[in-house]
Length: 607
Image (cartoon, rainbow, N blue to C red):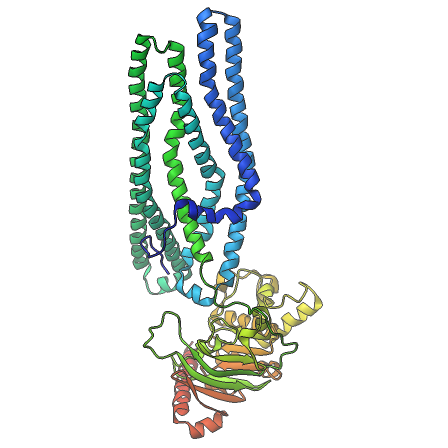
């Protein structure tokens, strides 16, 4: 999924959008408040310096009392030191809490990604999720520690300072405020433009991250087909689009800065002219003019910073929107309100009138699974065969609720799988996929991934590990540099396809589920290794119910019975010999599998 700034969605105000961070910030709100108070104290101390200057010029300097001038200088120094101390306190108060909010946000975001169904991950690009997880959450931490505090404090400082400007003469204060008033209109225009650009920029950065990730993961394919230049051209176009958006953002920021710098300068010039005129009339004296312009100078930084802090806040608002888009995604695969339990699963798996279609499928299309009825007896091995597109892989995703059926039900020992908690369901039913995914962990950790009940390094864990590796014919792990403690590279790409599949199969076997669903997990193995694995699996599957997607006749021979899937329906069930005798379509499917297996054998011989 690629989200864009012009995607249809409701647009809450910036304040309401950022208020969604409150539950995460609430535990550290007191520290953030103390940080803001420290920053405000620093600003008020800075505003006090012009008042002290006025007193010094009016008193000691006018009288020539050098001793008193020293005390005035000491007072200004003390105010400056106190201001610096308050700035240090502000950083001390907010930095730790801001990182804690970042930590909690990141933990919650990752947890949410783990809980959301596979259908969600099918729709969303991994780069979009990665940019939200890293860049957007980091931006919110910086905004909480710096942007939010200074924005609030600087607005208050401007308000207090503006009131103080009227202390010396109402006309000078009025000129300064009226001249600065257009800044609010400029800020309104800026929000409209910059908010859209900020969303575009962050979405485009997510798309760019996706391109980088796909290129890195697919580097072997790109090199093999000589398509590196094509990938670079695509990346360059995306990078150029992001660059143009960033330039548009820079122009928007430059426009607001132009007014933020120009209008205060105009205010200074007009106030200087008015001050000279008022001084000539005797309505203000030089000490008052000095204090007025000193106060206006102190207010200049808060006024100029408003543009930067405003853009920072809009970036934070966009980051918040992007993060909560994931939090707001509906999780349809959840635990039931009152889950049932199965103390000791027998392994009776049944599909009863099962229908399934993907969420984005057109309503006029036929269901991918269109009324599947299939029952596996406890301890039985059932092979699932069918032509490409018949729905075999889709069917294997339903028992563990990677997807939920859209009609009918799947039962385990007579209990609808939707009535079991996900933890219990996936403890009873294990899976091994054709596309073997391994993690950047040790061989031991990958194989024992589903055995949280085993203490690491215990004799029982070692026994389970060795048995699983033996069944999967994965003895090659002992030849790795550190044996089973060797850390596998990212996604196991340092291993061959057959090695990855054997470790994935060992992981499924080690889980010791009551039901084992195997989605063609031996496709990357040579014929001889496959035969060894199948012999070992016969022993393991003796007491385990197994549903095996078969793409080779030899895999079919492993099964007690065979189910023929045709156009989303099971059209025949029986032994291999029975189906060969009674089903023409089954003979056609098996002949196509035999042709493919013959090609594989020929390729192995040539190698």
